[in-house]
Amino acid sequence: MAWGMAVHICKLCVGADRIEDLQAWQDQLVAFRLAEGGAPEPWHDTRMAPKRAEEVLAGGSIYWVIRKRILVRQRIIGLETHHDETGRALCRIRLDPRLVRTQPRARRPFQGWRYLEPEAAPPDLDGSGPALSADLEAALKEAMAW
Image (tube, rainbow, N blue to C red):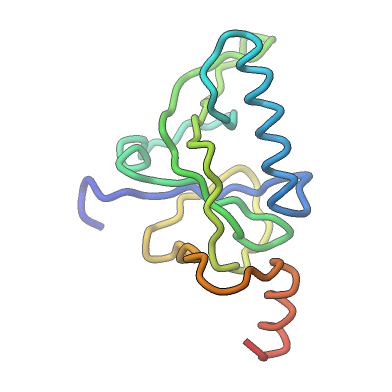
């Protein structure tokens, strides 16, 4: 990999069954942040900060795994240190609010987050043609009808 090239992060979206669940959760975060006078962008806190932060910030996205499939991504717009109510340091991943649907890609469960190299990232859905639910698209692929 060439130095300076973007690298992505892959993360399980625990508790979400659909992309709409992720959107609703982030809408709540943004409303909370706005009520406190903060910026109108969603975030995700994680214990481990990326050691490859410069590469992540060079155009990387967080690819969300929902029900064992990467379905959507968000551009990462910042990384900062944050402390929880006990004083423990966390990495706050600041996200572009726009959810970009991707071609579904199977992903086994894992703990925390993982780097995702650009060549391994699923392509964005371009929006041309009818949108299928992720479940229907997965069923069609499983039946080898796609």
